[in-house]
Length: 236
Image (cartoon, rainbow, N blue to C red; front, side, top):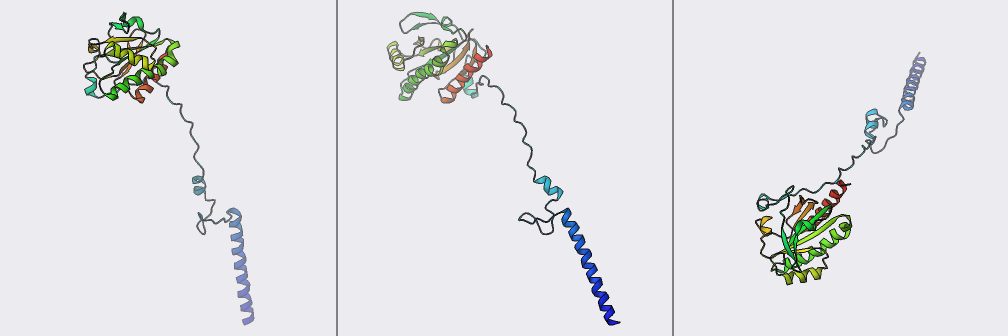
């Protein structure tokens, strides 16, 4: 009787182990174990939520950048109060002498499409003298060179200096564009109440101001070139 009971117990145990093996085998087929550093013991690496989190997001197509525009004129209220001519105003007409003493109407020197009018002065400090030379050179390089044959002209108006001094700076800079003289600053007084120069204006063919700046900097140079390119493109 005892031998039969032990045999029965052993047989029952084998049946339990066999059933457990079947269940494990069935589970393995449905979800094979692949334990790694990111998989906890007993966790199915093919868990639905885990699979979704591993899928990289679909990259959305980038929108094209907006087309360039003529830069906006930004300045403090204090500086703005000194400006008598602003964007969309028409620059005042004037009759001024050139370096040879010949009188010229400012409007007669405008380009067929655009005109850059720059008020400049030699001044009395080393810095102002360096800036005066750089302005004349850069107007040649930035405007006359790339845009001179596209209907864009430059007119530079010297404010407050003698004719011989102005001639010397123009010759040193090899500036090949009209230079007018405003020795007493009477014309500039119609432009601004403060002699802050260089002061550069971009005008359309009728003399309307499209853009201007009160300082000389790399940013101002880039904005001027961008303004010219945009304005010319809009005329096509």
